[in-house]
Image 1 (cartoon, rainbow, N blue to C red):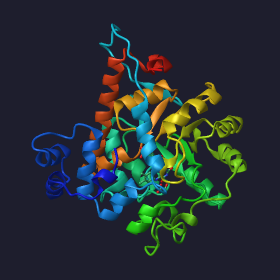
Image 2: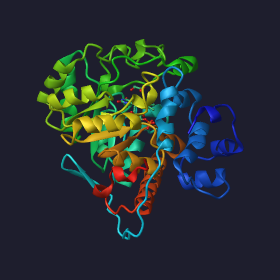
Image 3: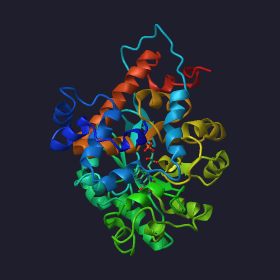
Image 4: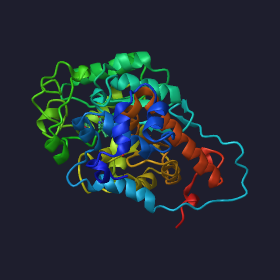
Length: 388
Ligand code: FNR
Ligand code: LAC
């Protein structure tokens, strides 16, 4: 859904939502929406906007440049039509998937999102608790506002760790070892962020970060409140613009847990990823936050899947807002999907309970979409589901 269409008007719904406390989503939603609960993911956005500081809201919504890729990510799902099968026994649905030996109750994970104390005072702790209550795996960002060990201490469901590798290899190794020691199950190295992009919207809003404790020793990494996220300088000291495939081999050699690349779009890069022995790839354009006019991820996915040809799992994120989107991504070859902004809107609207609710709604919609297209388990979701 377009944030722009809602950006300026503070509706009655938002005004009422602002008056209620973050104690319970159902209560908040009920008093805000006249007795109804949040019933789809889009319902969380106005509630989150009303609660979050204006700068935080801009940080979450923002994309790069003219935000064309942000829009395409969502629109591309809407263009894909489903082809159902009837009279299939769907009285029992099995949504389980096994990823790297870990069973997930359903193929929806939480993408890494930085700086979650901007969106809610409990930040990553609330997200991890909320994800656990829903039985989902969360990928914790290197740029979290909470130490990775502290997030692990509250999580009841397995966590993965997102790695922003550093030019200081000693520090990177230490970060990887800390994540492994804290029990994280996989590493997602982000490879689409040699630098941040033209974040005009963040620059206009002068968004400022909160300290990033995993990187406490790096000056300027969000620990300098004079910098704002629209400026390239804010992340400069903690992004490695010199990173190449050489570092991938090195990182793979030191990682004891499955090592994935996040931010692959080009099938030729996917081929190189296989050659360099990574465990999996995430087709992502960083939610349209870095390079504008990249294609929608769901449009890029089929080419990547074709190139990989089953040699490793391929995941996708960007623009997933409905259970039908999850179904389409799996039909086009994803092993599972990640959601970013939707759970952050849940977090902003109602903290931990909001995150849980977002995941449950999406899971339920996915189950409905499976049943209504005649698919009783994930293995039976294939390309024949797409109306061509
Ligand atoms: C992100 N994303 C991101 N990715 C990453 O690898 N490390 C990070 O720290 C962050 N931080 C971050 C902050 C915010 C506010 C957003 C919205 C996104 C990108 C994220 O993991 C994911 O790729 C996209 O959010 C997916 O798109 P949707 O679901 O937001 O449309
Ligand atoms: C972002 C970085 C931190 O998207 O990944 O804001």
